[in-house]
Length: 232
Image (cartoon, rainbow, N blue to C red; front, side, top):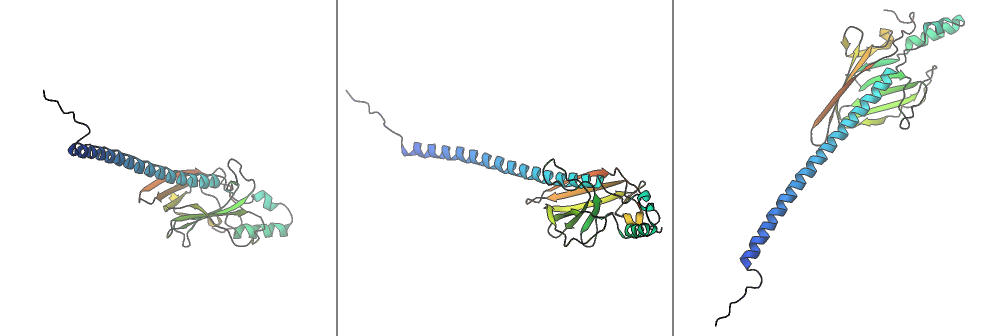
């Protein structure tokens, strides 16, 4: 009577087949995970760029809406004649709102506003502030500076510029005069503030993708400064 021999273990061919199957499955899982991870990172980076751009637009729009037009004519006409004359000269020499996307030194916006940058979240700082934005196209950096505004316009030392946004591809401003959009504005010549300001921003991430956005800020106060200070 012959005994049947039982096979214990696997043959070399079976082991090789099993290893090949495991390697194939692992490579498929890893590839899927890697692709999903890269897609999630790209999506998160895009959302960060959008949030950064929207935060800049919101801050600029809030400051533009609170733009200060200067002293009321009634305020200037009161008091002694020498005080009125000094106030008139000061008003004529000061421009409370200037802007241009193609400014030679990159200073695209400078204004006096009641809405300064917030020191802490949801805690606005009260008072009048001088705010300016400068766009360095070479580095793609948007810079901002802010200081307290004083009527005497004293020199308070060099301005301190802080980074407002990085990776900025472009930042275009247009100013509405009530009839048409214009590329630049200077309140000392126009003797008033614009009716609205349109802002378009584009940011590019490390992968070269461009994210853009825009908004329009309507000015709540467009009071003329002193009527007799600027000749037409």
